[in-house]
Length: 398
Image 1 (cartoon, rainbow, N blue to C red):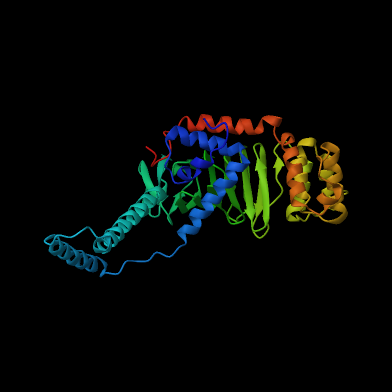
Image 2: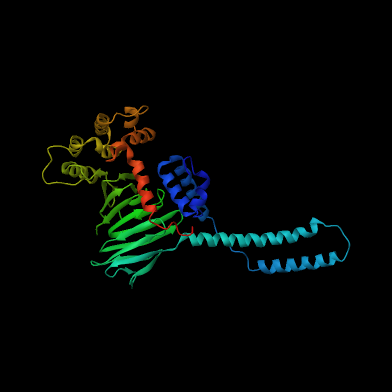
């Protein structure tokens, strides 16, 4: 059905106005189509801007003035009806204006009610075991987590959250989490400490998790995210992609990779879980400046370059913007030895961190960042198809 583009359906999709099967097909299309995804982001931005418009209340005298005006017009019309005359639009124009004003109010109220319904101000929480709590109230079997409320589990408790209609999040023991926002353009949790496992079937950047050291932005995926009592975090992606962000620092983490975060620094450099121990230790020193008692015979960057594989261009690509001078040139040479830059990408441009060239090379490298190579995006679409086939569809689209 959507072999071309879905631009005409995006507005209705963003507002939850399409049928279940059509919604699933649009979501799958958005994974692999940059053009439609860019337009979807513009629509979401428009909705967000509209939400910021001031809401004005009608004056109390509005209905009284309308009733008085309509009664006066009705009396005038009855008087005029007793006299033989031709129809005059000027006679009826004030009445039409009054009716139009009433219709606008009714339509405005209806639009507000539909938006409020789609915003889903609370999520369903199910107890898996133990005695999880929402605020001070214990969850027996199911409960509702409202915006601003905290969900907490003790050492013997686990719970599952239905993320609106776009996914599920399982909460491990000893976890504290808060619902920050839920609306058609954004669903957001805050993980203070503990561990969660998320599975999301939605277009990119609709689901976010705030932590003390980074924000996890879902790109259509499944992942685990844990935060210790000091705010130190660790993300592990099991399918799809997740972006970890803090201000202007961002790490893109694909399936099979992990990324640590630290308060005051943000996300470190992502790495694949099968990287060597030496590689991961050296990378931690580069990211977070760990101090060791015994000086290393090699610098951390030398170890990372020596231990890297073609697949580890994921790490090297991120390092390009995190090292400087001769170190950046060394990272470039190692990457180019694994995967030569494509046409139009120059050494000088990469060393100057030309954004267009970096992203062009990144697209070329992605096949090395996945165990399935060039089948990465098809695998993501297949995952969404299987997951979406198990749900009843988006709420509010029945």
